Each structure stands twice: as C-alpha cells, then as structure tokens.
Length: 117
Image (cartoon, rainbow, N blue to C red; front, top):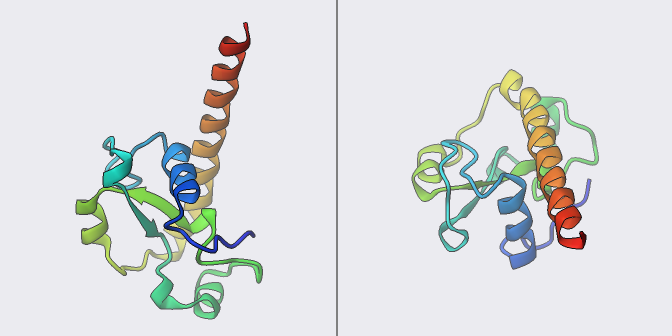
C-alpha cells in the first residue's frame, strides 16, 4: 500500500475529495474543497502496529494511505475525533471504498469520452 507522505498536499486532498464525489464520507453532504477536512478512518493515534493487530490488516497497511483517508465536513470530523470503529465496520469499509473508487473512475471515463467526441 502506498503511503502518502503529506496528506495535506493539494493533490492528495483533491484525490480523496473526488474519490468520494465531493461529499463527506460520514453524512454524505456536499463539501467545498476549501472546507473539507481529511479524516483517518483508523486514527493515527492507534499506531500502525496496533491497527494491523486489532483489525487483522496486512503488513503493508499504512495509516496515511488512500485506503485510510476520507473527506469529511468539520462537524462530522469533530464528532468522530479519534473514535475507533468495531472490526466488522472496518472490514466493510474497503467495500465502500472500492465502490466509490469504481464510480469515480467511471465518471472520469465518461467525461473523457464526451470530451473527445
């Protein structure tokens, strides 16, 4: 898994924002890019080794990877803070991630198709 060296980098932020269709991961409300906050689904405060052990993740898991970063509005991010989800929720999360990623890829392909025509 690729570690993002700087999650506050504009490219990383834009990628996360677009992957979730410019919506807060938790409440699904539209968020403006400049108001978006990036949340770690598994908090960094837990630590990599404990996260791997607790959730049964692979050794290549990185806390600062796209699989652990989501766009949030300020309200939801403040409500979540460093709370931990149970294992079932975390195991279901990659399904949601891949669903939104696939949707995002299709949106890009459709835009390219209509742009080139």
